[in-house]
Length: 186
Image (tube, rainbow, N blue to C red):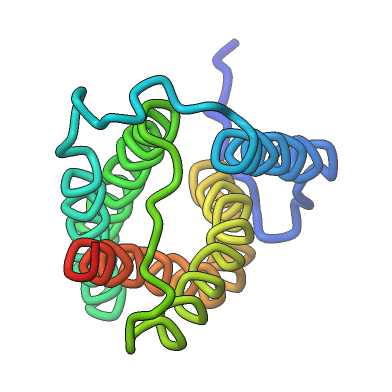
């Protein structure tokens, strides 16, 4: 007796609520940890003598993620699914490395102060606020979108990706702009 290979889930297969709840819980815990790290943790290298280039590395990683996201969008519009998948996995890789580097930077150096007397301040804080708020939402959206794709739930993946993509792209692009503004004013 031969077994038939198992097919990918059909479009009628529902995503287990426990998976989505787990992703949201992990994302909430990550956001809470970042909040603690940024606002309550005492930096270990206030003088900035160790790994001083991390903010630049973070900006480069955000820029690379942006390029991969734009390539992924172009590939999916051309219906080149293997290239789309590779580009999105690349964007995910760069974003993951960014998150690790970002956490290390905050653990070492703490929050970067922006000159509130700068003419850029009104624009900067609005941009930073939108970047932070959307990054909190981006993490679970990205993880759920990836789960849907990797588990073969492509109709649900497509529906969520329409919202995930612009949020992820905005967070990546504004991360580079925030770095540029901080380094230009600081």
